[in-house]
Length: 387
Image 1 (tube, rainbow, N blue to C red):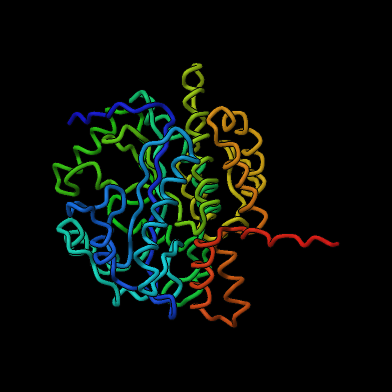
Image 2: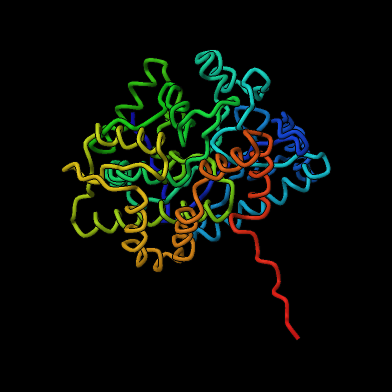
């Protein structure tokens, strides 16, 4: 099976941002995505070109266009948030984003009426119905098909950094799971989800997709739901390992990190140097450590087994990648990784709100709603002039 890889401009970026819809008064998930999407139709009745539905009717997905800068992609989806709010605000509904809803129950949620979703639920049953998860997906353009698999293999070394920085699902169905990202553990239960198999080149990817297609596991490559995957239709690598993030600052920071790492690896290939990789067992252990401990994780950083705190590694990588970020025009966003390190990832902020409110989880939802509306660091009040 030959799989065509679309032409794409190098290191261009696109973002997909999944938002949950919640009742402003109670914090409960509300299944009104169809109503929101209908209200967003154009004058001719056509659907919104960038705001779509997802598996559950409590979710809308925002999809940016193709941009040369992270700021452009983030601004694109931030504008779409405003479009959604124009519909939901009068209904007393707020969009929020985190890897999981703190207390939602799977049996209260409605599945979107599409054949592909009904097929997924029929096949996966309880696990599929429990996919109350939200994430961000970042696409980075790859100009040469033969670079895709080497860069994908190299990106696996950065899964724990991305997992820890974005971790935002400590609660599941009202329970404190003890994980920074319970979403990571849930999502990998689906067939073809989780960490990629280690492949050597593009023909090996084509063979993998062919094997799954002829045996009826998938219908096409889009049903390969790896944490990081080739996206042949768009000519990109798609990074899907992250939990949903609740602020534009976090979205920009993580997207910039991904864009810079991909561009750095692409340059290494151009200059004839191999992209560093790690053993699959180290990659798997790292994912678990980051999902369990978040920013408190000690991770394996190379093939010799050296271990460092993930926070120390992120700060080091910010320095290493800054020249690349400056060249790509995303240095401001890359430096915002320090906001996450200094003020805590979402899972830490959620746990702090719950502790402050004696375990009240609707208060956590309210905090997530406020963060999406105001940002990670709300604007400082105007200073008073002393006369």
